[in-house]
Image (cartoon, rainbow, N blue to C red; front, side):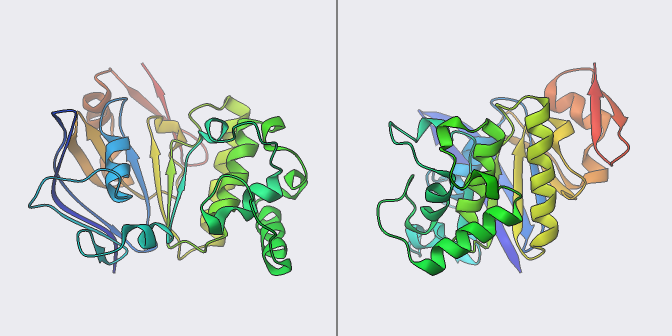
Length: 260
């Protein structure tokens, strides 16, 4: 079964076509990456999957078996976890703890505005523990590093038992240590939840962990390549994607590193 089915999708924003004839499928339980430079169309594609941007008439967009145009988008979003590193923009002046932020997941709020049940608290603590983040339960989110914040946000997303998780450039603001810390967390998550469909969006080739075995590469709103990791993460394709003379250096753990 397919987690994502997109056919002939063209998206206009501010009078300009930013996605051109997208055709893309993701199997359920698949670990897929979306790679591209700034402006390639990655964010617009994610917004389309979430129902925040709509393609022109004639396109087909189905997520988790639900066809857009004939479903309640808000209900569908409850089955999708969209993890973004921009938590610091959502916090306002409230000093939410890691536990409170995790508990807000089922309500789709940023922060907790009700008294949670004992079962919810136990589940939130269990999720934090699975992510090796139980020490963050009583820490305020504003005092956490960016990597720690994203861990809490992943725990918050898992409170709803999602069928699809979209990791939207989660390491974009992290330093090297924070990035590696987060990528280990994502690898652990992939191993612990084999049935969870994961889509990882990035502009950094070295962030694509070996668990992401299929991918999509965008360039100026077009699909430049899609398929298995081995087939599309090549120097020739990446040079076209980034307009740079990229050379690839394989790492010991299956990741690819780039030099110019």
